[in-house]
Structures are given as structure tokens and as C-alpha cells.
Length: 345
Image (cartoon, rainbow, N blue to C red):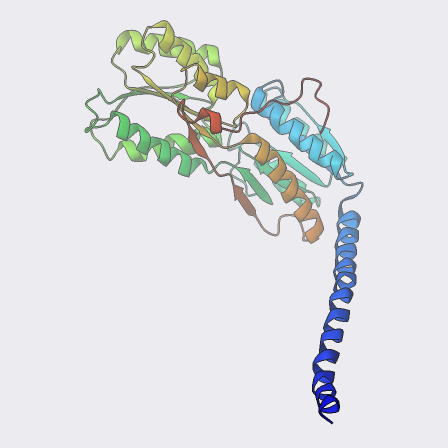
């Protein structure tokens, strides 16, 4: 009698336990179905689609890094890829964009040499059913997406650093040199605006030179050389692009002021920028990781195509994280080169 009672008591829990075990074995089948469905949805939305990249130029470390990563990601996802090089020429840039509209890729990843350029073309591409994503350099027209630095935030942060290092409590001259890139380029416009907002908070900060270099290292060298002859007590030099700023830093070194003049810049964390930090040419380097931006812009392109939403119906942004790199933490920076053979990963 006791044994039968115990068996009755165990029957229900045992049945539940068996049902639970069966349920556990059944779960992967459900998950597998969902996984297959998502895989098929992605393949249907992306396979055979075309992504076109229109950089400001090729042959420069930053643009070449973006191009390599974008090309690798696109081909890895079984899509087609095309790239056009306007070689810093605004007319060629606009013409190339108009040619792309005629070719009708599914997504155009574009950079704008200045904020006015490509406004008309971006709207025309969206009207033609083409998604447009702006990479790093935005225009005055909202595209479907933006991937790149938050230049306003980075300008304010750099301004705070310079005020801290050169302002009223630093015991230094407060004299600052700004090596601008292209005066109407988005990165330049917003970063310089942020700098000036922070400088306005400390009357001891004096901008003794703010000239355009058109992103050229040689021009940055010449400007810096001339300014240092007039103001050998300059406290800081800032340039919004590391390759260009290295020219100014070389002028500081030539004048025997390395270590006395603090050089600030930013860049994508490729080898040339990191090497400049190691050599003491750039003292404070704001790294926003071009490799990650290349991946992010393709992720955004894929998400837009999978969404099925009409181009021009919305605008999203992915602002890159950044961190300061100095000689003290350079070993932790993620500096990397693209392969010499240029073959996609």
C-alpha cells in the first residue's frame, strides 16, 4: 500500500519532468526555424545588391582604410561593389555622384568635400530610390544615414583640453594655432566651432593664427613655420586631420620647440597617426577608429536594405566613440594597417 501511494505521488512530477525534457529537446528546432527565416530574409534583401563608395579621394591612409574595410564587408556579404575617386576635386565629385544615380546602385556611401556640395545630388538619388549614407563628411542635406565622428562633441572636448593645458591656470602663454582643413568641410566647420566656444570661456586663450591648409601637410608646415617665427611662445597647435597636422608638427620639431608646443589632432587610428604619437610629433591624438566606421557604414547599408523603407523617409546616425591617445597609452591604441596586397579579408 505504501509503495503504491509513493508511486502515485511520483507519477505527476515524473510526468512533468519528462515533458520538460522533451520540451528542451524541442527548443532548438524552433530556434533553428527562426534562424533559417532570418538568414533567408537577409539573403533575399542583400544578395546581388550593389553598394557604391564615393570618397573624397583615394591614396590617403584614412580613405584607403575606409575603402578596404567597406569593400571587404560588401564582398563578404555577397553584394556587388564599385568605387569612384574624385581626387579632391569638387566638380569631379559631383559628376561622379550624378553618374552613380544613372547607374542606380542600391546604396551610395558618399563623402562631401564641403557642406554645400552634393545637396542636390543626394535628394535626386533618394527620389530615384537609392539610399544615401554620408561617411564622416556630411552635407547640408540630410541623407538616409550618417556614420562618423560627432565633430561638434569632439571640437568641444578638444577645446576643453587646450584650455586646461594652455589657459589661465596653466602658467603658459595661451597662444593657439589652428590649422584648418577645407574651410567649408563639415569636420572642419564643426570642430573649429566647438573649439571657439570653449576658448570663449577663457580670455587668456588667444588664437594667433587660423588658416586653411586644404588638408595638405606641406601647407600646414609652411603656415606653422611662419607663425612660430612671429610667436615662438605658442602653447598649442590643433589640426582636424592627423596626416595634415603632421606637417605642422614637423615645423615645431624643426624650430626646436618639440615638447614645448603641444600638438593636438585626431584621426582614424591607422598606422601613420599612431607613429606620429610614438615619435612625439602629435602629443594628444583623438582616435575615432576608421576600421570600425567602415564596418558600421556597411551594417547601416544592410539595415536600410532589409528594412524596405523608402529612401529619404528617415535619417539615422551612428556617431563613433573616441578616446585620447598619448605616448603614455599608445600601446593600448588599436593601430592597424591594411594589407599591402589590398586583398579583402
